[in-house]
Amino acid sequence: AQSVTQLGSHVSVSEGALVLLRCNYSSSVPPYLFWYVQYPNQGLQLLLKYTSAATLVKGINDFEAEFKKSETSFHLTKPSAHMSDAAEYFCAVSESGGSNYKLTFGKGTLLTVNP
Amino acid sequence: GEEVAQTPKHLVRGEGQKAKLYCAPIKGHSYVFWYQQVLKNEFKFLISFQNENVFDETGMPKERFSAKCLPNSPCSLEIQATKLEDSAVYFCASSQSGYIQYFGAGTRLSVL
Image (cartoon, rainbow over all chains, first blue to last red; front, side, top):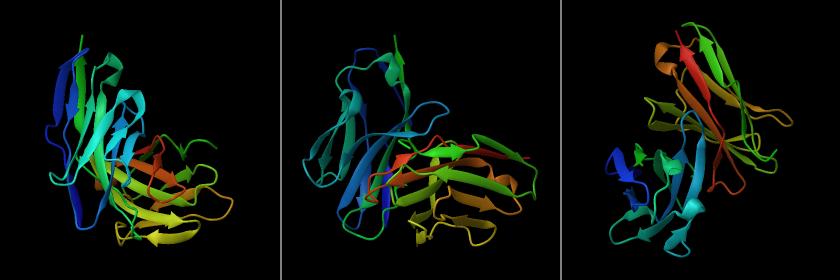
C-alpha cells in the first residue's frame, strides 16, 4: 500500500521568495514520485517526475524536487516565487516496476504568492 | 490529439438520473485512467484501461459505475442512478507507458 502526506495545506510566500512544499511518502516497493499543479478550474499539469534515475529532478518553470530515500521525502522547491505560481500543488506516488500504475495523491498544498 | 479531451465540462443531473462522461486520450497513448476528485482535494482512483481492456478496476464502486474504452471511440464513464455523493470532478488521464499520466481538464458532475 502507498500513501502521501503533504505537510501544510496552505503555504504563503512573498514574490521572489523561496518556495518549499513538503511531501513525504510511504510505499512498500520503490516508488515513482510526481508533482502536479492545478490552477483554478483546470486539470492537473505535470510539473516533474522521479522515476529512479537522478535523485534531483528538474521540472518546468524552475521547479525542482529531490528524492531522499532515507527521509522518504520528495519536497518541491523553487528559488524565486512568481505571482503566476499561485495554485494548488499535489504530490503523488505510484509503484515502480509493477503492474499497478495508479497514482495515490496527497491532499494538496495551496500556494499563495503575495506581492 | 495532443491533449486529453474531456466532455462535457459540466454536467448537472437530478438524483436518480444517469450521467455519462467522455474522454479522448492523447493519440498514441494506450493507457487511460479515471479519477474522482471530491471535496476539492481528495483524489480517488477509479479504473484504468490498457487499450480497450480493463487494466485495474480496484477503485470502481461495485454498483452504479461502469466504464468502457472501445476502439475508435472516446472512453466513457457512466453512473447509473446518480446520488448526491457522486457530485465531484471526474478526471481522465492518459499515458503511453502507464507511469507518466497526462490529465484532462475534468468534468464537474453536480447531482441535485
